[in-house]
Amino acid sequence: MPLREVMARVIGRGALVRWGVAIAMLLAVQSLVMAALFWVSAREGHRGELDEALRHDCTAFAALAPGARPMELHRQLELDIHRDRFLAIATERGRVLYGNVAVLPADISVGGIGTATVTPTALPGKSTDVARARLCRLPGAQLLFSGIDLDDSEQAQRIVERTLLFALVPGLLLAMLGGWFAARRAGRQIDAVRRLAEQISRGELTKRLPVGEHPDSFGQLCAHINTMLDRTETLVGEVRGIGDDIAHQLRTPLTRLRARVEREMDDAETREDFARAGAATLADVDQALAIVAALLRIHEIEHRAKCAGFATVDLAALVRDVGELYAPVAEDSGRTLAIEIEGAATVAADRDLLGETLSNLIDNAVKFGPPGGRVTLSLRTGADGAWITVADAGPGIAQADRERVFQRFFRARGLQNVPGTGLGLSLVRAIADLHGFTLAIAEQGSAITIAIPHVRSGAAHD
Image 1 (cartoon, rainbow, N blue to C red):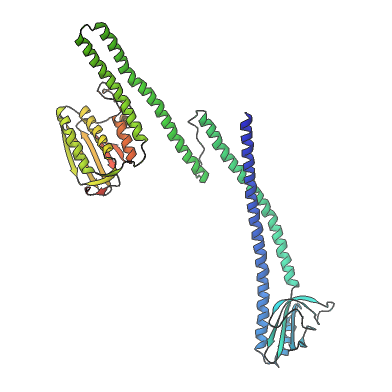
Image 2: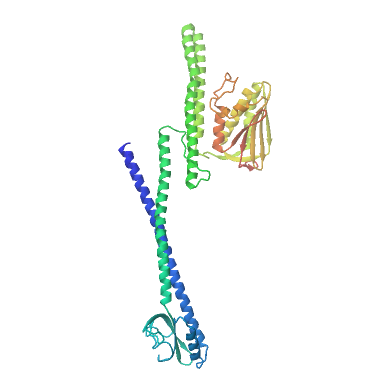
């Protein structure tokens, strides 16, 4: 393997590794943020419950008469079997009258709430404790100190922290595994596309990307790439076939031209002989030039910018004008051309190209229809579009040839000796594709219909 390709693969792998690490870091940061939010939510939620209980104590004692407050205080302390409540009633100056607190904490102001160091009187072996406390003013010139021991709260907080820690470790591991898996999967997908590109560049145009039964976003991209490659393969095949067809189609007139020139040069003796030889030679040259001109015309139409030169075209007026132009041509060939128009509609299109399409279809109908027959050029409009049909009295196109008739240089059996380039219907197909129209061949009889969607009813107004 060339060094340059090896370096490209190494660089590509490095990029995938960096991408995988970035995904892992993103998932890890997400896990950390979620853990922090959960921890803060649990802490603040528990603290909010404590503060709500302390505010309830202030409201309840404020509603009592001063004489009933000591009894209520002793009742609540007796109910506190876990000894995690601190209650005290004090004077305005802070002297404790009743309760299980020796002195009021200095770090809690009147009306304030916070964490304070408490000196309990009913906890043997414990001189101080930490509590969430509130100091509020009561009617009758008294203060109420209410506090809740934080030992249980801190223990619950430690349990939450340990739980988060235990959950965070596998979360981080999963994040790293997820990043590694995503990078590996992306690497396989990119390698598949890279291998396909290498195979296509070597000329293996039949290779395609695998697409699952239920494709994800990458699978849908692979399906689109396969569709693009199908179209590319078709175009390459057409180009190859066109080259062969051009060589085959030009070989006959050029061979005939060379043989005629050689024969006439040997046989011609008079000026008239040379004139006839020159005229015959020019006819063969004109046929070869017609083939080249038709191919160039098709190439020009296929590569024309979409909607370039489009304008509002009155379909009824177009059908009428083309029909009147070709009526004498049909009459000269012993046939009649009938024009049938039902309704009026306009469409955004290139009028000259549509006229060229109808001209080719009428020319085919006159050329291949039975002598003395009738050629019909009709327009029919409806709510969902318009249809232009060219029909003759012939038997129609064989079922096996209905798709092939639009191929370049195709001639049905028995028609190889009919004058023409074999490119008329290919030109019609190119113009229809440019406009987004659809061509349809009748199941019975000889008729080709151009289906034109997105029309507007009524004739065009200048």
